[in-house]
Length: 367
Image (tube, rainbow, N blue to C red; front, side, top):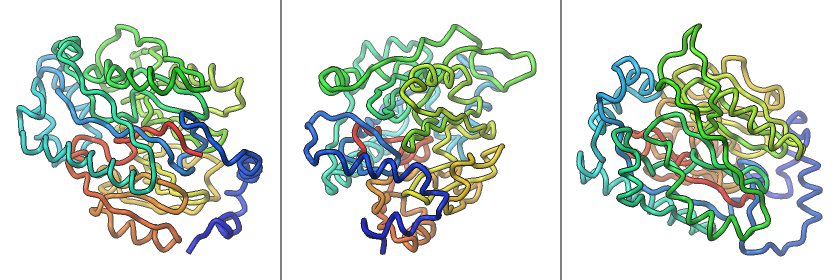
């Protein structure tokens, strides 16, 4: 069983690079933290304050996209999810299946309760107002996966820019949290430039050009001073990486893009961190392989079907506790053999809609 005393000693030598500095900094800090502290050191640092998503979604009207565009933007979903998602074109889930809507809401309530059992402070976004829903027009709306519209790196809170049209205004549901928690805190708060008015999502071609600075939290994974950003063409863009570098580079962060297969929505759908020195990964989705900084880490590999079912999208509460779905009990058993306690929670509705534990949460404080 891994303990705080033997954790670092158990890691492979390559995984220790940079971690000793982190430990020295952490040990030099006072044990007192202000209640409203905002800081994310890494994906697996102790989770202290988290936002758990609400459950609202209406996809664009069917006529808003061509069939080719629909097929492209739905390509990251498992086949069994597509009938449900297609039924949401022009309709709120509560209209399509009120029972499934209630189940989805209960999943998020259960997730909040589990985090609170580990003494994590849980916050929630607002529900979208009627006016906010109407602002999306026939493009629809979403208030479903709080990981993506904004994210935290160190003491930087960053509003992203989302590619899918029904998600463009998703950040509005979190604005009250910015007012109550972010503005009073000792942190920076910036927003990515608004995307250009460009053609709607479609398969990339040799002639397609899009300089919009898309940057989505599901693509952004933080490990100390390294910020890994996934690029598949479905979400974040190269210009989004440029924006992130522009802000974080002067602070000493290294922003590193990772090229993804075109049917992978976000980096956290192919790569997840469990604790220092241990990752879960669907390697074929990383077209140029793992970043050099991670190649010495132990890894738990998953299959394509497991990745599409979001097996990599678990949530570390700390380096010693990891949350995943009971559908992945066989993977959880492998994680447990590495000395990590595994908690199980059913998120089957969330996963049908394209996100699991990391997608359903946003960290404000991990340290």
